[in-house]
Image 1 (cartoon, rainbow, N blue to C red):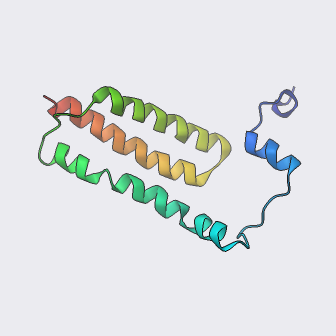
Image 2: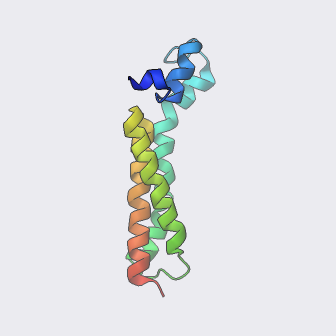
Image 3: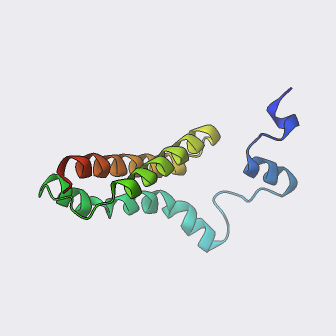
Amino acid sequence: MPAQSIGLHHFQKRKRVHEKLEPYPHPDKIKRFVDKTILFVGVAGPIMTLPQLFKIWVEKQASGISVVSFSAYLFVAAFWVFYGFLHKEKPIIITHSIWFFMHLSIVIGALIYGA
């Protein structure tokens, strides 16, 4: 039995079947702006984590870092990467792959240099 007949296909695709697809690039200036900048935003977010990585790996200080929290973030990022590949969503794959490696680096550093 095909996945589509038992309702396991991607929610957005199912939603789009019943609604008109929006054009790309979108004629609305705001939506077009968001469409063009989403990859930049997805990369800029993890860049903001670089000072934390610098503190851990260069200064070798990981006190105050919660390994449990960053391990949870790591799991969430891994799941998002899986979801992105499953649904072939490039912005999700790129953004959460970067987050995955950032969180992985923080967890490893916290385990090595934590108090």
